[in-house]
Image (cartoon, rainbow, N blue to C red; front, side, top):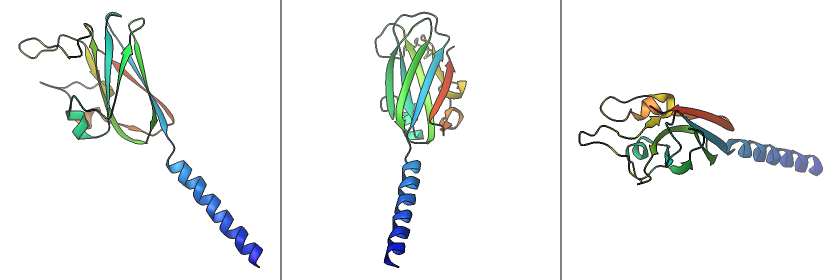
Length: 145
């Protein structure tokens, strides 16, 4: 009787470990930036996981500075939890670490957002740019303008 009880609890414990490991599985996100006009400079990519850090240009959830090859740039973010994310990126053509605009605030460097959404008089909203990360290896493509 005691052996059956021990086996039962071991099976319950093993099932709990398998379920726990599955719930905490980490995902990889690949961000492909297309439509760059040249290979000069770098692309700055901000991965945001909340409306708050999406609005804050200096404090994204994760960030990457990526090289450009053949008018394309690819960023990889590993060990992400499933959930809502949004991406914003720009081509820092002169490598000054700023998104350059003219005196009217009109961008002078190319940029893009997840879902390839556009904003009207500013960046698109979090709700427009957000997507659900729900695969182990998910690819997002952003076309620069």
